[in-house]
Image (cartoon, rainbow, N blue to C red; front, top):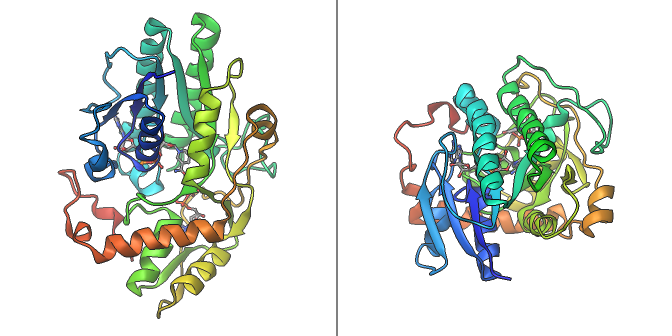
Length: 331
Ligand code: NAD
Ligand code: UDP
């Protein structure tokens, strides 16, 4: 049945894919975004769609729209972006959660929270099941994101217990694909853009830390399956269990792109998790979901996207925000 759906953070990387997919299913979409890390370019192809509406809105402020479902994705996700204004990041997670939950309560709408594997911190249990409580520094440079997302989860479950709000909480593991910003700072986009430009590939630390990378299309299928499942609040992990060291990722990107880039080693940022791999047994059991796109295929698609972006006029367009993110330029 056709629904009216609010997507906060809908102009971002994941949000724009979600808008697209839900429009294809003939829903009406309201995309609310303050364009901090999102871009109008990501949703330019949707702007004239009769069922799509964009609102420039900051989710730290209350939002008043009439909808059947809410997906709350608003929050910068890349470490350089979320550390750029740490206080704002916490406000976005915490006040954003309160605002969408208040709206969901009033409307009796189902509300989805984009939580993260970062709530497990630097995990001592591997792979990470949902039952693991995590190992998180409360006062480090990543804490604004990790703790903000943890409080948001708490708020979701408190609104559920106290007010009967119909919640869905997903813990997303590293996801990549087209529409990541070329200067996003996350590892997949960094390595691909560096390789395409013939610049050095910057590995932080010795490159032995691991991550598990999910291609965006798989993740979005999981989101929608979860939102369409009754009687299951989560939290549920969504991610691809294929685990790689950053060195192996760099080598794979280099082998695919070719060119003259060298691998160089840079200092490891504080509190950088040493290992990360989702246990997705619960998603398989409750949602019948598992990823289908292996890293190699996803990298091919993402490389093709960035190659086109860097070759085209879009590469020369200014960022859609006033204050330049000076700290974020690639090496
Ligand atoms: P992104 O930075 O591309 O998207 C975030 C979007 O939120 C952007 O469009 C940004 O402009 C918007 N936003 C930020 N602050 C806002 C505010 N105060 N008000 C309104 N809009 C605001 O990142 P993404 O990768 O698309 O991540 C989307 C969500 O998924 C985030 O909540 C992130 O924490 C979560 N997540 C993503 C990943 C991943 O690997 N991509 C992993 C774990 C969790
Ligand atoms: N990383 C790296 N080089 C880069 C960017 C990131 O080696 O140019 C490392 C980073 O230190 C981390 C891993 O890659 O160990 C994943 O980083 P990302 O920022 O993508 O995600 P997160 O740390 O939040 O999982």
